[in-house]
Image 1 (cartoon, rainbow, N blue to C red):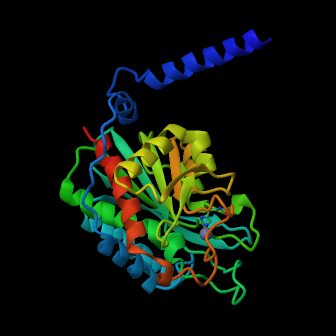
Image 2 (cartoon, rainbow, N blue to C red):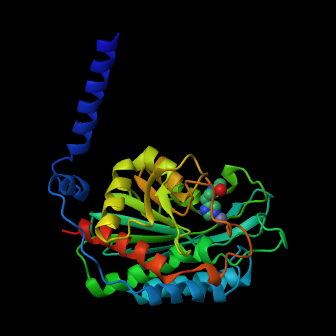
Image 3 (tube, rainbow, N blue to C red):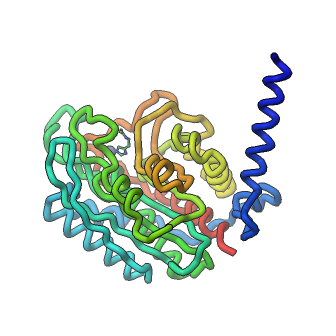
Length: 329
Ligand code: AHN
Ligand code: ZN
């Protein structure tokens, strides 16, 4: 019995290794290359002040809840920023039905750098904010500002777009700002979330679109944030989790990127990018592995500019941009 079990494990390992290295004769993925001859990541140019300003700009619109004027205005601002950094912009507008049957007018904002290349990386974040503060003790029915939950990931990605325009790497980069990630009621069920990414994964902006891998940034701006290895990322794309966490270590950001793996913490946009779009994707998300919970400001009115810290934005921004640049030929 034991022998049979071992054999099965051996067969599985050989099969997995074959799958990983069988690259159809094309360029080897950077992850495989890096595993063989692991090169230390070098620190890219990334301005924490600029990323912070991009977060502030979004928060200045007020809560970005679908079907509000602030949401429309902020969406237009984000698309204009990507265009300013020479990304080709596609605005994917549609209507989806929310948990309470409200018809939401939503917009996924997609920016493509070097759209002609096949060697591509996908970076994404949600740009909408939650319509309620269900974790707060006060004003629970009022929308939150979402400085961390919404604006932080988008702010880091806009600064990455700005730096890509300057560095001009030879790699395709897609940045997607997904809408309606957080439009759920108090104690909402998991399908209520991630409406924008679910729509995109079923209706991708280009026929046959793909990328080597994807990185989701969600709640990446709070002071002293801890990013544990997130459960679904480990299920679908563990090799990329280790790759990115190693790069964070190279850049001395190990205090933010924790080695522990979280238990299941919920569904986030990367789950649909993995299961429906079939792009291996990871989530960099603040989650405390000790208390097994999101930060105390999560889904409360304390999620405002007071909790945002430039150093955290830098740790995440440098790590993600270095990952992109390592993938360039
Ligand atoms: C749920 O709690 C279902 N998902 C966590 C992902 C999330 C919510 N990100 C931001 N808000
Ligand atoms: Zn949220």
